[in-house]
Length: 290
Image (cartoon, rainbow, N blue to C red; front, top):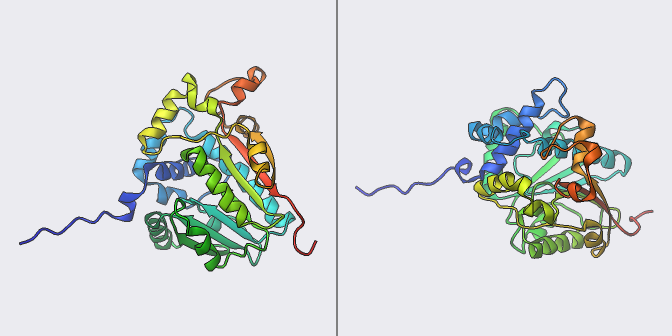
């Protein structure tokens, strides 16, 4: 009698950082003073995700602050800029397509590895989740060269403005990979498009204060690799006009302290580089019809 080869489930193939991120969003959603409500995060997170969350000194506050910051950006842009295409590369277990209100005609593209999307689809369907927009998921490898063509084939129009939200991705890439990715995105976007992402400064990767955190993320199988010390200059070389916000300031505004816990009055320019950067950028040029 021959042995049957074991085939891991999609859930078993997903990196633990995705579950931890979902657990952080579920934790915030349970608070009476929550900054956002993600009703699907808890069912996506798993017990492993919650266990990982508890290992973090600030219980994932950077993820909470990032989520609220970019929620507000998305809401403002779709209503004030009248943009109807949204792209989430490395979407992970994000549920914005299901939990936020979107104008009629909004197309929401989620890109990620097949096992991530398969697990996500199964869990959300089992719990009766329904997207509040025209959601289109694409199983792609962002390290390959074919994904831009797949996105266009799925209905993305590179001649119309779009919002690209890239959360929790770029610091896992090398600097060369970051540049290649930004080049691909820039080639896919029309004038008037917006790009949002979080990044880290090289000081963050070297600081003894953050050694425990960097070792923790490395233990999850995805060490931080790529720093962006000057996002404005980098994006300018691709035709984007960028603005940078230090996440610690938003954390103080939202009353969600992030590690390292340093009083606002003691934050020097050098210390500010120990926190994630929130970058938003507009593609230069005139939109079609303007």
